[in-house]
Image (cartoon, rainbow, N blue to C red; front, side, top):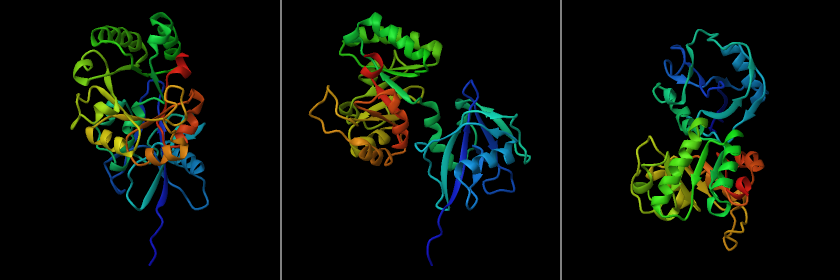
Amino acid sequence: MGLTAPKPVVVGIIQDPTGRVLVACRLSTKVGGGLWEFPGGKVREGESEEAALRRELDEELGITAGRCESLPHFRADPPPSISLSFWRVHNYRGVPYGREGQDVRWCTLDDLVTLPFLPADLPIFPRLTLPSLYLISDVERLGEQLFEERLQAALLRGARLIQLREPWVYARLGAYAGRLKDLCAPYGARCLVNGDPQQVGSFADGVHLSSARLWQLSERPLSTDCVIGASCHNERDLQKAAEVGCDFAVLSPVRQTQSHPDREPLGWSRFAELAASTWLPVYALGGLKEQDCREAHQAFAQGVALRSAVFG
């Protein structure tokens, strides 16, 4: 007897202007009753995923979806009987409510982790908290004033995560990290410092680990209140980042770069293979621009990491 193909299921990610996410509690009559989930449902035979999502949102929540975007980089670990496809619903008409009698609520990202959620949905939580752009500082080349002007412009455009990566002694790095942290705070942006987590963790929102520092660790070096990223170049690095408990990884180089002309680029095909091998959100780095985000998402990336393309 042949194996039964998994049934396709679509899932909608709906967020309000404050970043809260719409979730629903499964009815007690359903499998997993009492557990929380993102709204959605099964795709009918002959129906496209987007059409199924629009129908399910109408049937479950009484809303008419507007622009919907496929999120191939949002990957979960569903049971073998189903395959999950995640979509972002950018806008809709109507006021969502539990049309089938289910409890529906808006949750902050912090509240999500307190709810008993369907296990298949849990792996995408980190992807909801991370932006599509990860900016890397260029202070030494530009000077502090010009760099901060360009950072301010990037923050106004929506940048929410930046890495301070400069060849400075820790005393100066710490003072400047505090300055950038204050600059980022009004926008809800976070500033990470590239360096030794035991030295920089106290004056930033988190730390970014070089691949060399990553391999010196056997466990997560900072509390879960801090964000930890890691530079990776191959599958072993990605596995190590996951074992250590990093929140995300940066995989490079995707394309040839002037800074590392001797390093063989991965290309999007190999990048996608590596990014698909881990549940960690992975940023693409190396010769990229902000416009490459869509292609990066198709290759299972959380987004792109940029330096000269933003601050150049």
